[in-house]
Image 1 (cartoon, rainbow, N blue to C red):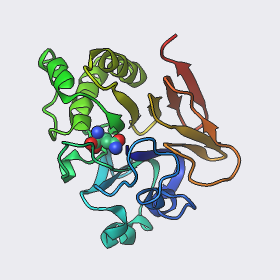
Image 2 (spheres, protein in one colour; image 1 turned 90 degrees about the vertical axis):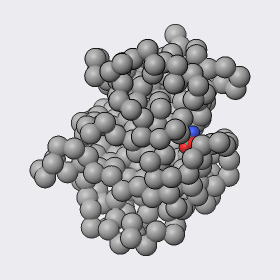
Image 3 (cartoon, helix red, strand yellow; image 1 turned 135 degrees about the vertical axis):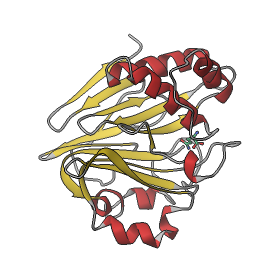
Length: 245
Ligand code: GLN
């Protein structure tokens, strides 16, 4: 399983969000605390962020190497700040390619998506075949296929609805091992996330909301999201909804 996080609020540096916390994503790349599948997240990492004063489309920095080996990221991360950031470290699912294009965040040019889990690629391809408007996936990785499905759905309905619909339909479509579908999606104004067979937490802070696979410190305020829930957050509030009742 991968580990991911998203921040929405007043601008924070990428270093502050991903490198400098006591149990930062950097540390989670070799020593995650709550990961249910796998041990390290050394198959790549990626960060996406919005700089609305400069450009509407989000920027991305992705590499197919462990986060701790990339000095270039460390050197820019303290010099880039944003009010909406999504970041992930990757532990590739067996059989999935290890390449930059298979590394989150995925984007449709407006939104950013990360997937913590696994889904049957054959089932996703079958669903994509029925949707001529879906964009061509960036990679054969299950998460890239799933992102293309979300982009197609999000073109026709609100983001939270699109994410919920994709998760519920993929959960019903897979064969064999149950799909694990912790998704994290941002569009510059909101965070949409699912807890679907892996850990997810959030903390409301005085200047925004942090959503993460696991708490990045031991301070109070973290709330664990129950399994099978959809989370929607903006800078001021967080709502949770049970997706199976
Ligand atoms: N299945 C995805 C991949 O291979 C995500 C893996 C994960 O959550 N560890 O990249």
